[in-house]
Structure formats: C-alpha cells, structure tokens
Image 1 (cartoon, one colour):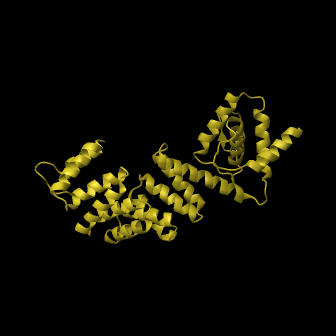
Image 2 (image 1 turned 135 degrees about the vertical axis):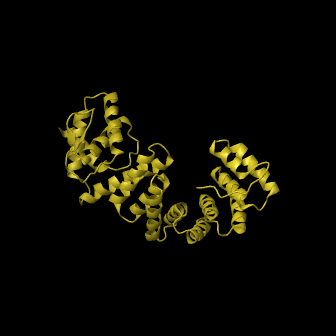
Image 3 (image 1 turned 180 degrees about the vertical axis):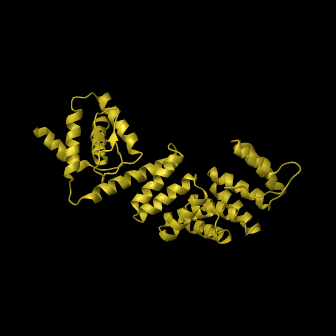
Amino acid sequence: MPAFGPRRSHSASPEQAVARLKSGDYARGIQILRLLQRVRPDDPAVLYNLGMVLSDQGQLDEAIRHLQTAAEQHPDGANILVALGVAQYRSRNLAEAKKALEAAVAIEPENPYALRNLGGCLVALGQDLGRAEECLRKSVAALPQDQQGWVGLGQVLEQRGSLEEADAAYKKTLEINFNNQVAEVAKTGRSRIVQANMRRAVSGDVRPDATMYCLGALQKIEKMSDAEVQKIAFEIAAVGMKGLNPSDSNKRYTLRTLPGEFSGLQLLSYMYVTWKRVKPDADIGFDLSREYQAAMALHHKS
C-alpha cells in the first residue's frame, strides 16, 4: 500500500520512519512515528503510517484508534480508509471493515488495494460474491503481481463454482511465490478442486478406473523399499502442485522415478497409494480412500 503524503519536519519526518520500516528496522521506524505523534497528534500522515505498521505488527486496537483519527482528519483519504479496513478485518470486525473499504472504493473506484481488500472482505462475509469477483478482477488487472489479489480471486471463483478459472487463479498465485502462507492457501484450494473434479467425473460411490490405478500402484511398489516409494511420492506431489486434471484420460505426464506415461487420475491414484505407504496419516488434500480399500481387497486376493 503506498505511503500517504507526509508533511515536512526539520528534525524527523514520516519519510524517515517509512525508510526505516522498509529497511526492516521496525523498532526505530515506530519510535520515530511515536515521537512525531507527540508533536503532531492530529497529523494524518503520521497516524496513517503508525497505524499501518502497528496493524502489521498485530497491535490492532491501537492501530485502529490511530487510523480512525487519521480518517476523521482526512475523510477523503482512500488509502487511510483501506488501512483502517484491513486493521478492522484483522480484528475480525468484518462489518466495520466492509464499511471502511466501501468508503475507500467510493472515493477512488479504481484503487486496486481498496478493490482487493473489499473483495476479500465480501468473500469472508459470504456476501455479494458477484461484486467480490468484480473487485478482485479489477485489482489483479491493475496489480498483476499481487499474490493476495490472485488468491482472493481464486477463492471467490471457487465459491461461485467456476473451478477451472479458480484453479488458474491459484496457479498464478503459486507462480508469483510458491513458498509462503498465501501459497499454502492456493495449494489447498487446488487440492479441493482436484477432488471436486474427480468426484464430479462419474456417479457412484467408487471410481473403477481409480480403483484399478490404485491396484496397479500397489503392485508396482510392493517390492520397493520405503526410500524408493518416498521418492515417487515426493515427485508426484511436486508434479501435482502444477496441476493434475483427473478428467483428462490422456497420458501426458512422465516421472523420473517410474517408467512410462501417466494420466492425471493415474498419478493422483499413485500419489494416494505411495503416501499411504510413506506416511499413512498424512492429509494430501484429496480422498481416494474407498478406491484404495477396494484396490487393497483385490490385491490381497491376487
């Protein structure tokens, strides 16, 4: 979120505090802002920056107080209202968060931060998902490298049943950064979509094709060591993060750890079976328990 335009000070300024914060020196940045606040208690620039950093640090009650005061002093400041909405959202006061973010969008209808956070707030409230989608689409169009915007878009699309588009949004989230908390939300979302697509593909309690793939996996790894099975499990998990389509019967995937070519459902079945061997209690994000049990019964008979 861009810093609100500060006033100048001969001794210290919000710019100096922001520079400290950007360098990671939060203690000194907060100290400068608190000193400035003593001399300029109603300066919206000081209150805005202090409120934002305290919100990021989890000191939400104080952050909200400062941001509310800043909004009173500068009622047309869209970024102040966005910061206030974010702090309210973090404190789980979703109704107040929505009010602040609606006000920010009313002032600046194209502000991508206001749009992104309003969209996320509407998703959390379960309200007006059509508008939430519209806000988040505009946000990522303006900020195509904003990971939070993409994961929010994925969530609202998933809730609205647009699973293919949701998966694409989650995939974009992972392309931006594969190893952070936002990425974990996207990975979980993609796993849910895989499972939903898999169950949607056929009616009935057990998928015969997945059962036979599980049986083939059981036969394949039966005489392998745990270390060999673990390598297969890890490689399939890595491939799965890039997307596996259980409805596509084409054999388009290959592995270093196993010969041959595999379809999406085949790899998901192999992944389920190998993880059952490596770590039986692991939750890998989709359920083939019925197919696995059927395959186990067939395997014991053979």
